[in-house]
Image (cartoon, rainbow, N blue to C red; front, side, top):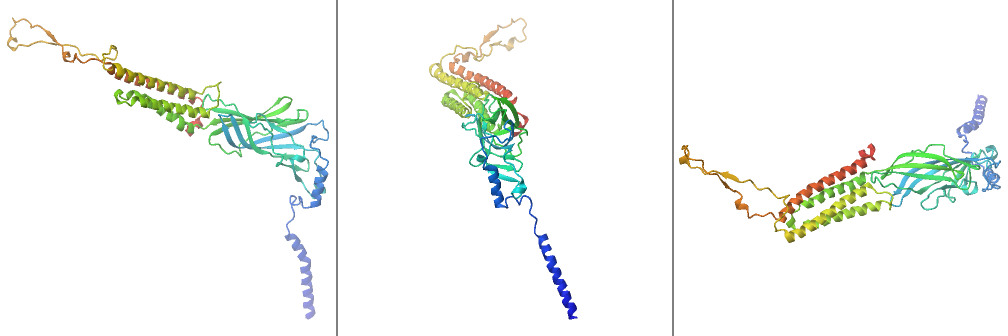
Amino acid sequence: MMVYLRTLYLLVFAFIKFVEPQLTANSMPEDSEDDKVGTDLEGMKKLFTDTLTAYDTRIRPRANQSQIVQVNTTFVPQSLLEFDTSEQKFSVLGYFRIHWNDEVITWNPIDYADTNTIKVPITEIWTPSLIILKAFDGDGVVGNSQTDISKISSDGDVQWVPEGIYSVVCHVDIKYYPFDEQTCTITYYVSDETITTVELDHPKHVNLDEYTENSAWRITSLTERRYLLYNTYHIDVEFKLQRRANFATFTLIMPLLMLAFLNICIFLVPIGSGEKGSFAITIFLSYGIFVTIVSDTLPDNSLQISYFLLFIIVLLFMSVLSVLYTIIQAKLMASIGDKECSVKCFRPKKSSSNKVVPFNPKNADDDTVKDPEVCEVDMDAENDDDSYTWGMFLEKLDFILFFLFLGLILLCSTAFFSIMLQRVSESTLNEI
């Protein structure tokens, strides 16, 4: 019996010793191909030594130097940081996806610890010298040589993603401000190469998947275009922008219209109140403030005139006329206000004379009595002493000028908004 138990014990012990290594091996996770990258330190050092030691960054990465390097780029905008219309500065935050093939840096991953990709600073490899035209700060170099890193695969595919703030000079059309649409273009090219050495392309369309909306401008369309200029390829990334006009509508246009209708109330202020002149001067100064505010937001452009600025000038001119009229009116009232007015156009008409027939009741039934004489009695004879003075004439003139200026303001406002509404899209109207 003891012999059997001992034999059973030995069998169980032998089974456990046989199965335990297999269970341990099955419980350990298998290393993926990516996890093996860089696990062998000596292999990684050998990879960098073999690929970069004799590398010359001045030579295009082609075994046959007569072949062209195909450089594919894609611009990805992330945010519109600034569009200063007074300085004509357009700044956008974004990055480029730049791809090309380097025939010099290739290796077999099996020989280098299954390493498929490496990261190399761009200063150690050949990179296309991308330059942005019309850079606002004068430095249109794409990328930063001190911080940018390139990713290289074993088949020689190089990926470089330079990110930055790209500011360019953008011509501003101020004619339809504040309902204007602007077109700004970021143009870049390879500065030190020609079409025989490097072919620059933008095969993919620019999209706004990573773009954050701007509070002042809306991108209506985004297109790219490649063309040949000065024996090298140029890429244009064109932004079509539309101003969000709700801020300008409530801070500029609406107060301006209120001020315009307040200006005509000058003619309703009584002449003898003594406040008519100061009221007219206050309205005139308010227009001057509006001109200053608008001129600060617009570029110093003498080639184009903004319709909005022209509208303000017209209202300012009407305010000048009202101030001049108020001054002249005060002078006339002080000098000839009580004198007889010789102008008959605004003078009220007198009522006609009435004919009164004296009636004698005793002769009412006597047919032989002749008709009594008819005499005229002027009912306004008592008012002959009331003269029509220049003061009365000026008071009548105030009402005439009130309706005249009201009609001019309505006409100018209708013309201004009819021109502006031709440029306003339905989405802009919904925002307002």
